[in-house]
Length: 197
Picture 1 (spheres, rainbow, N blue to C red):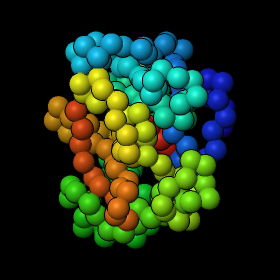
Picture 2: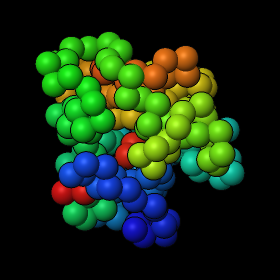
Picture 3: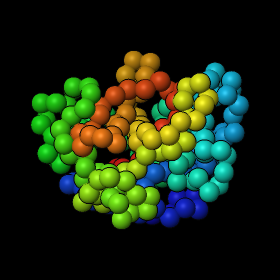
C-alpha cells in the first residue's frame, strides 16, 4: 500500500486488514500538511492536529507520532478506503485473538493476546513478542507527551473514538502479554495503525 510516498506492509487478521507498520504520513488525506516541529509550549496548547518525530531526525520516521486532534480530524490521516480504527474495531481484533468479548467495555490490561501483536526478536524493529499475527507492534520510542517532552518505551496506538475529553487507545506492554485498553489526553503524541474500510 503506497500512501504519500511511503510503502506500507499490510496484514489480514481475522476479518480485518491492518497496516503492519506505523503510519508516517506528513499530510492529511486531502493533501493538507500536518504541522510538525512545534515547540513544547505550542505542542501543549494546540487544539489542532500535529505530529512529531523523535529529535526531529528523519532516521526516526518509524517512530512518527500524532496528537489526538490529528486522528480525529475530519480531513483524515489514513489513505482513502482506510481509517484510524475505532475503539470497537480494536475490540474486534482482540476478540479474534482470543479475548473474552465480555471484557470489551473494561479498561486496563485484558487477556494474553498481546504476544501475537508484538514484534519478535527477529523482526526489525525487534521486541519481545512472537508476532505470529504479523502485526509487528513495537515501542514508539520518542512518544511525545502532553508537556511536549519525548519519552520512550510506550507502544500506544490511537483509536478514533473519543472518551469524554480523551481519546481511546491500545497499549502493548513490555512485561505483560495482555493488551491495555486506556484513554489518553489528545495533547499526547502516539502511534497510528490504519485499518481497511
